[in-house]
Length: 109
Image 1 (cartoon, rainbow, N blue to C red):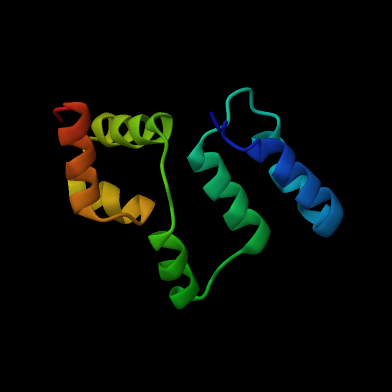
Image 2: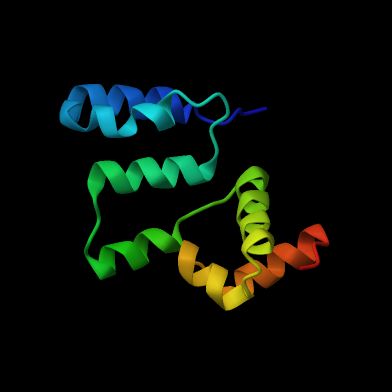
């Protein structure tokens, strides 16, 4: 069985070797006890600062969310009383993706 990559160690090494000036910005995320997909996405934004719309849309097609991240997003939606379109625009997802997650995990908002 293949285990998930240790993203904390990967990003820590990457930042120390290639982007030491950004280490202070990323320090709080790297020291978290539990690390999820949303943390990886946040670190990626901080380090590479993608401002190009084409690159951002290409990156979005290749994202994969773990259950913990999905539940955080859906909890965020419920806490702020947002509809699927609103939460989708915040996280740059499809509203159909949000609906699919709700159906998959039987969550009602």
